Length: 124
Image (cartoon, rainbow, N blue to C red; front, side, top):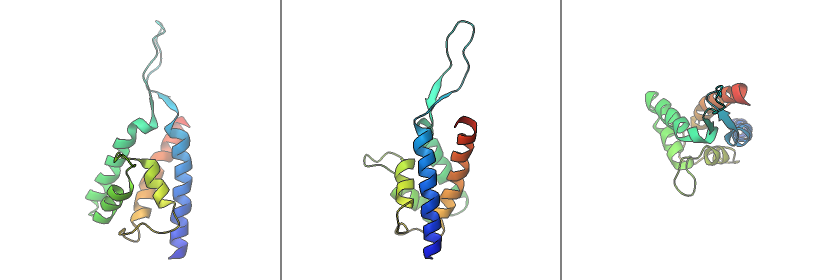
């Protein structure tokens, strides 16, 4: 059990580093044209709600109430807004989040890892 908790913690820390780096980068969604008007730029953190919605949807489709509860309990900042940083920070802690199924953190990290690493590969 301790080994699994350590592996989850390490993965969460790695993803938190990726998130911290990528969340502040600007991403161009369209190129500029001959008139010199540039395209739209966004930051990955602008998609935070969409990413959490994806994770919640995955939890619901897989009948994982424990995962949805973990997201709702640990995935919000102090103002109650969705926060990937808060979620990853909680999962990077030394103790398993209370009330979570034993593999709930791994369920989240697997899916979130694919999302963040894909974005890093394309835009990092």
